[in-house]
Length: 123
Length: 370
Image (cartoon, rainbow over all chains, first blue to last red; front, side):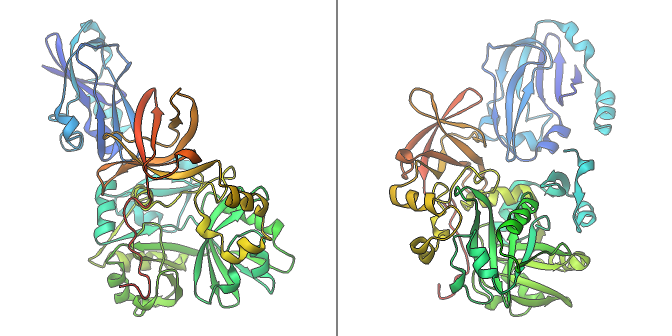
């Protein structure tokens, strides 16, 4: 199991050809109180860098992009009832969706935890 | 604008020291939030919140013809405004467009006028053109402005400035806070009881420190200021009001005093009289949006064919109602409470219902009221 990060502040936890996607703790702290999450439908094909979900804070709406291409296999229904999970546990219970990767090599350009930390520090 | 271009307010270091996240707003670096917008919002509704609104323009309008001069660009009846009382009013253009919204206080021999931060330079230029010669317009940049808002504001402030509890809503007076002279009015922008406090910029940090040391008080950022005023149904200039909207369209006819309606004689009167008589073609309304997703400023109001017939000018999530709310301009035919309207945002359709504002009841301290 490996976790990768994007410059758009998504994380992706990969287990074989399956992965779980969410937004990072840095992202949730920048957004503030999350009040709504729009999740992708199961079966939808998402493409690397393309829109996959929307997260709405009190202040504004932000797009969540797919870190890699693939087919959505599950959306986190817990966020529909309790979107504040994105704030309280962004890299755990607050995950957004799972997908089946269509091209594992797309992970190559993503950051590991150390690289992402340096990236956030430079923001 | 980048953070580096933003001017700093007198309390800049104080905000940063308290963990505020600063953002550029109205040309200044300002605190958007401290601990979080929802927590700050609820704290203000339950206890007392301290807001730094020093970006706003504080003006003095003085001279024998100050009242007459102001009445030429405001629809307020200043002749019946007693000393120490304030009025909400609108700075109007000749076509009835709203140049700014403001608070005007009669203070002895002059008027003390508070205008929006982003528009103050334009207001000063406009007033300079329109006020008669001999009227002195002074921008008092050396004053900072704080607001203390919430049901416990009176308890907290009375401890530091004895006597403020005797002020009724929309009245003000001269007080001292910790030895610093302060002009305090019972007014605000949250729908709650509370005060606005003008003190010298050189002393504002000490005053803020004293206020924030009261157990009822926490500092509150701009984020909660916006969600609080939205729940209170109060328009935000530059969003819900601009030079393309009139007071009648904006549903602010309460700001057009009885005598002024009858007599006219102020900028925009012709159009306003016609709109009062015939009704405006569109009106600012409150919307309760179905579902959980907020609909934001810029979303379209659409008719059955999908044609744009209006627009959302403010929208967000109400922390008290735990539901999305918005203000929008809609065609007059759809402006009555209970009307259904359809909104479109980023290709998605939302259903909403026109509801009376405020969304959350005002709790002003009106004298004579229980």
